[in-house]
Image (cartoon, rainbow, N blue to C red; front, top):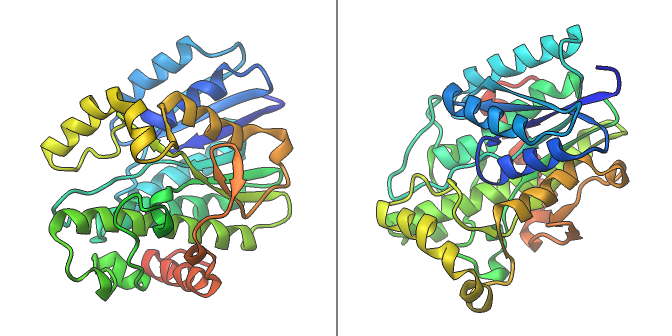
Length: 319
């Protein structure tokens, strides 16, 4: 396995993550071993077989069990992966792609640890994943955190974030400005708030990583037909999965031109995870393949550092 490198992609058995894994494994630039942390071993194996069938010679893929909604499961995964990297069973760790996420519906749901699901899965689960793997994420290496332009109120892509301290967000309590939300809007706002947390995390991580290890945030744009909205009400879920993908042209004109297919966004995500020219790029927000500014609010370093410290406390990660 000399010269080979490992990339971990959460949410890699479908949607953008699967598309990114496909692009990486089809690449003939380098030798890649992709690890897919999956909740469902059966679905993971189906993904592995599909990805293997299209992989270039020398590239490999496997699935390992992990549930981002359980910190015990995340720690079991990181412990197993660390042991395998240190023993040489798999190649050195090159990248962590924090792609998996959930967009909750009208019910306030909780993770196995009692955290509100969007904040617990989208932020806290990945916070633990990255921090537990930092000892084997040695230069040159990188972290890519999938965020969303829904975090930016100026773009008017849905309910804007209603930031609160991390302990409140972990309970499902948004800022007082969201007090009048109905159940559906509250669910959408928890999602956009969790995406703001992803950007705070990415920027704070970039300031803490050693030279040669980078962290960047990625906006995939609006990607239709994925499983992101699996917790949404059934009628909304049906429209999202089966109707909107056929209206891409109209949505690009009426809502935002930044609408893409999963292969388009997955290819950009794969580029962020592997491109040699990005080896020294860190602390940036990428809209597809273009580095750009995130929202004004997202550059609040006090908030980002508070989120980091509170996340350490909530998850019992050792600093």
